[in-house]
Image (cartoon, rainbow, N blue to C red; front, top):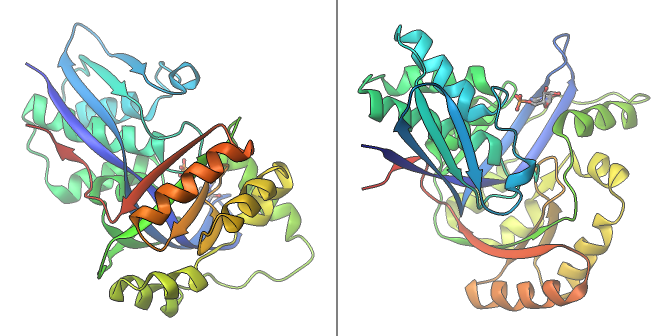
Length: 298
Ligand code: C5P
């Protein structure tokens, strides 16, 4: 018997970042939108804990206990006094080290898969608490849809979304480390006062109305200057997407995946074609959001 869970990627339509806290994390106002690129995590009984991975970038996914999927299994097993004897297989489609919460998706997916496989029957709140221990973006991977994340991003408030938004994602030739991007954010902000991060009402209203033109002018990402500072070539990808007709072009989360908001599905596929031919990125995908959170597959 095995259990397979499908988990979406995310894009941040607003990422407001405060000053570094004493614990090194940053307070955020993080408006997450789940999009229809998915990893699938399959949990199968085994003699010990084992992680395998297939798909684009799988060779860059750690298969040891640092993998969030392995840590999720260990955390659930420890809480329920059992051994984490499970084989977790990750079928990857979310870009690795791309700023789209691929690792977090695997953590949330493994947690839900092990819960179902072992029949632990953990409550939603317990699962969310374990997710928050695993990483700042992991709770959102579990719930999906759209949400405002505060604190370090783990305290979620669900958001209404009044329609589908169509996106193009350009994958970069290499990854960016999230801690390195936050460190660069700190370095770039050394000489100025960093305001408290607050959710932008214009972003929330645009989501609620399903208004793509309004969302396009409202999207912001405070980590974008830091990501561009570490990876200047991303400016060329952003420019190519804008020239191809994207309503908005931004770095996704800590990057280096770039995200382009399109007026509709047809335009998204046209923009994807132009970006693919531009030579400014490694791969291009289209997706729409909101997408459902981690879901056990039949
Ligand atoms: O929470 P998570 O393990 O995903 O965070 C990865 C890294 O990103 C942290 O170690 C920290 O360097 C940075 N981070 C941060 N502030 C946040 C979230 C993440 O500084 N709110």
